Amino acid sequence: MRITVLGGAGKMGCIAVQHLVNDPRVDEVVIADLNIGQAKEVADILASPKLSIRRTDLADAVDLAAALRGSQTCLNATVYYTNLAVMAACLNAGTSYVDLGGLFHTTRRQLELHDDFAAAGISAVLGMGSAPGIPNVQARFGADRLDTIDSIRIYDGIKPPPPGAATFTYAVATILDELTLEPVIFRDGQFVTCQPMSEFEEVAFAAPLGVLPMHLSLHSEPATLPITYGDKGLRECFFKINHWGMDPALVDKVRVLAEFGLNSREPLDVRGQQVAPRDVLMALLGGKVPPIGEFLAPPANQPPDWTKEIVTEISGVKDGQPMTWRVGTLTVKGSLPTGIAPAIAAIWLAEGRIPAGVYPPEAVIEPEPFFAELTEAGIPTQISLTHML
Image 1 (cartoon, helix red, strand yellow):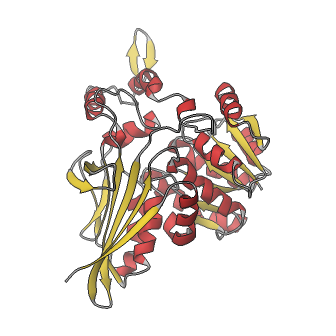
Image 2: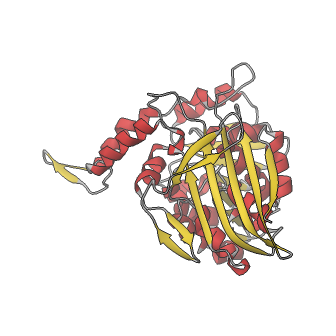
């Protein structure tokens, strides 16, 4: 099978590429990226005969479709703004599709393409990064074991950096949006918006994380889970994270910049030139992400110290008894689930394990075999059940 990774030279895309070239089910992996220099750096580090590079411009619809044609799956590891355009190219090329997430609103628009994908005989799974993705499958594990569901609460706990660290943990553009846009959650059976970074609570995670302060953030899981499990009576669903794994002081600084308008997309006239403040902010912060070499873990190097646990608590009733399933997926060193989870889904798509159409992960990703593949990659899942007396 051949899988094309759009943005395969990026920080999360390169992790997906690494996992795919090491999987015996995959024959060829194409890094499709505009940044050829960085793509060559990834290829040099991985040194796999399965790898090829194709310069691809996402702004050119014809070139994009040509880059995808002949691949069984497109793994879109670029920023979520591109999701709809890439899905259109997949329809043109006859290639199945998976991405890392759509930040709620884009995911909702992507689901509207279900009939088009079904008619074309190709499949799409939306939001298969570490989160969204893993929490959706965790939610399905618990939901399948309950007669009715009261709540699905998702917590993404990330090891905090040393004080004073001035780096972003993933795509700057996505973090800026998660930091400033209003989270949409499901509460008392309806969708409501909340203030960004609100409703803090202390949550206990597996060692070595311990107790972390968690807050609301706009995310894709609440866009689909309340619909998927509405017939089981779901009343509450939210996603919380701890400062996106960044130093809280850095988050506060970025929030101040946004409050002063530097995150605005509206152009300003600056000495006769039209300049969008967000473009300036992105240019200034673009270098605040670790270099590509720190995201890859070839055998000769020390794996990066990335520790996180994604926990989903599914509460409801089984046979008249209230209970809560806690599903926690932990990564300690090296294996970054944001790249590995979509790589697994990309393989499943190429194998024809996903029906034609567009789906959220909880609808088509079977929990047990998925968790087993994550475990093989060094990302184990622990499950506990609490009975309410």
